[in-house]
Picture 1: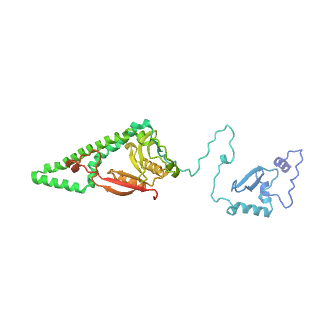
Picture 2 (picture 1 turned 180 degrees about the horizontal axis):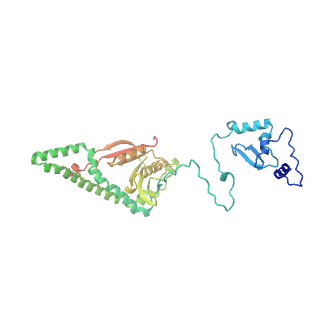
Picture 3 (picture 1 turned 120 degrees about the horizontal axis):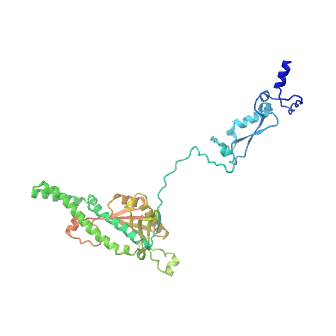
Length: 373
């Protein structure tokens, strides 16, 4: 009697109700003891592959099952085929071999109104620093004063460079100054005067450099830089019938400015020469506060683009710059050094003895051949 009561308590069927008949299994299947003894509700596991364009990975769906069926209940053939597909993933055509971890928030859509934030990818690259964007455009008359200021400051920097750094390129002048120091010591027998002589010579070089360069700057500010629009931006003349027939009508000159953060920071000009079919790069200068950003190279490339669009055969330039950075810039643009003029004369020079002794200038010529004539 106690055993019968215990059986009734452990039985899942309430007293007075008929026990359900066991489910009929299909032919070839047998009940699984592990599933019957499991405390979890029975489920079906559906395992399938989607086509390669959609997803190369297997997808599992977990659905409630009205019948207690498991892998042990399937036929040996079905179990074998399922196991091969699940393990031999590399044999599937178009399947990726890289492991991809997908979170539940990516597999299932979030409910409307619930805040969700996309998970950060594992291998997110670091953001690169934003580079300054330089915009090259044509000159506008309202920028006349800004352009003149940049040109003025760029020319004024050449005064100390010509006076002091330019002496390195003048070996004969160095020898002359050394002889003057020896003669000063022989005549005066004073070390103090001999030591003060180099300071006097450098002062004289600065004085004459300033004098000549300021005169050159005054001439430039009263010629092409006085009215840039008229000198460089004037519309081309009416082409002749011969020019239209041979398609040789083109713009002869132009002036550009470099704009960075809304400010004009660089200038350059191009002047064509119809006689030898060349265009000259002129008036290149960059504000000292914005150097080292590739602005000068962008300006130079704009001139080269202008020359190619207008079918010029070559681009030429001349410079008296002493800094090697300017020469390296021209070479990086493709220019070739074709010659140098010693003791170059600027407009306004008097060619006096003192001026020749304390002011020397070298004029370098560069050329870039675009096409053969």
